[in-house]
Every structure is written in structure tokens, then in C-alpha cells.
Length: 125
Image 1 (cartoon, rainbow, N blue to C red):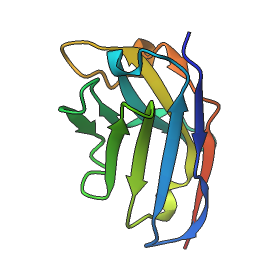
Image 2 (image 1 turned 90 degrees about the vertical axis):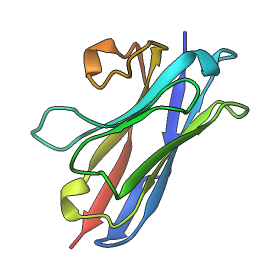
Image 3 (image 1 turned 90 degrees about the horizontal axis):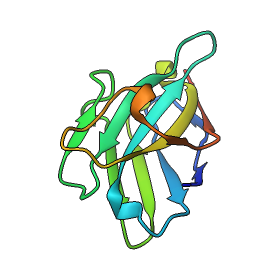
């Protein structure tokens, strides 16, 4: 069982930055691929970014490429999402998720086993 807790959300103006943090309660954090997803009101949960167990492979949604950066610190069992140049359309609840490490990075919700409770990000225009 992996317990995930997100933090760092808040209200920011368009063009601003936020850094989300997800702390994992597992001794085997370095065995898991980690992902960030988001869900806006009335919309389905969508993929944002993913990072493999070693940090050597990443994937991003087209909508955030060049603006968001996912990273991890295996010594701290923590994954981060640095969000720059935020836009109003980035407004959503952001969730981190964990999946057993695979040879190919996964970007769909159904392959992630563990989820955090989410943190709200609101970008004002």
C-alpha cells in the first residue's frame, strides 16, 4: 500500500508559477513510476506528466510541454511538479499517482494503482 499526499496548490495569477509536492509513504518509492493528473469541473481526469522510477524518462501532455517539469527525489520519497507560465485553463484539482515500474512509461489513469487526495490549483486571468 502506498499513501500519497499532495501539497502546494493555491491561487495564482496567469503567468505565475506554483510547485506541487507529493510525498509517498513507502520504503520502495524507487520501484514506482509517478504521474500527475488533473481534473477540471465537469471534465474527465487527464494526464499531465509522468516520470519513471529512476527519473530518466519523462512524458508530458502537449498542453503543458515547455511549461511544466516533473522531478523526483527518491531519498525523500517525493515527486514534484513545477508549473510555470500558468494559464486559466490549468485550473483544476491536481492528483499524483503511483504505478509499479514498467519498461514503458504509462500515461493513462487505469494503470496507476495509488492516488492522492488532490490539491486545488486556481489560475486567475
